[in-house]
Length: 425
Image (cartoon, rainbow, N blue to C red; front, side):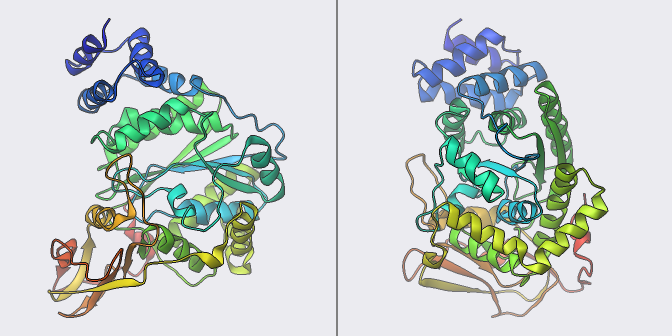
C-alpha cells in the first residue's frame, strides 16, 4: 500500500495494519517518507484516533527503532517519573532531587518543550556547561553515585519517536492521546526503569483538556506498561493555571532552587510532594504516609537541595553562571477585583512569543526570557498593580494584547485556604 493510501485509510477512520504502520513510520525514519506526508498522517491520527492495537504496535515500532537501556548495573530499585506537559511545570527537577535524597534511584530521560509547554531539557540547558548527553557508562555511574541523572533522548533510545516528536511540535499534531501515549511509553520502556510514575496534566494549560481524556490516557499507558512487565502508576493533576510563579527556562531553575530551599509554599510544592511520595512508596515499598513523612524531612533538612546541586555539578553545570534577561517589563492591571482564575495556555503562548519556546524545528530558545507571576488566585488587585513581570530579549518589548485578560476577576471572592483544594482531581 502506498503512503497516500495509508493516509487516506486513516483519514476515513479505518484501522491501520501492522504493515501500514511499519511502512509509514519506519519509512519516515529511513527518509523514504517525506515530512509533508508524515504530517498528513499525524493529522489524520489526531482527527480519527487509533485503536489500542495500533497504539501498542506504534509504541513497539518506536522502541525497536533503537536500543533498550539495561539498568541491571544500578544498585537498588529504579523509579522513573514523567509529566504529560504543562506551563511552568518544573516538577521533575524538584521531585527527582527529593526522591534521590531518600535512596531511590531516578533514571530520567527527558524531552524538550512541546508546543506551548516547557521541557525539562531546555530548563537544564539554561545552566552553563550542563551536559545532557551522558553516555550509558556515565549515566549508570552517576545513578549509583548521585542517585539520579537527567539526560536528553539519545540517538540510540527510541530515535524514531524523537524524529516524530519534533515534527508534531510544529505541525499542530501535539494534542493526540494515542500519539502522546506511544511517545511517552516508548521512551519510558526504552529507558529501563523498574517502575514508572506519570503525572497526567489536565486543563487549559495542558495537552489534555478534560478529565475524560486524562483517564483514557492513564488507562492506555498502564496497559502499555503491563505488556512490557513495567509497574506504571498515574496521578491526574490540575493544569488550568501555571505551575508555580515562573515560566521560562532559567527562571524556572531559580524557582526550583527556592522551593528546595523551603522558600515557597504553594500548589507546585504540594504537587511535587505528592509525586515524590508516590515514587518513594514504590521505590522503598513502604506505606504512602511513611513516604510522605520522609519527603517532608528531606525538604526541611536541606537534603533535597544538596542532592539537586550534586546532580548539577556531576553533569558539568555551573549554577553560578545561570542568567536571566536584564530587560524586564512590568505588566500592570487594567482591572480591579479578586483573581479567581488564570489562563495557563495564554501564558504558555506568551512565553513562546518571548522566545522561550520553538515555533519551528530550527528555532533556538532564549533561556533568559520568561514571565514571573506577581499575583495569584485569591489575590486582591487594584488598577495599576503589577500582575507579572516579563523578561524579554530586548528593551522596549510591547505585548500584542492586554495581559490583564489572561486573568479572571470577581468582585466578591473568598480565597482558597487549603492549597490542596486547588486541585479538583
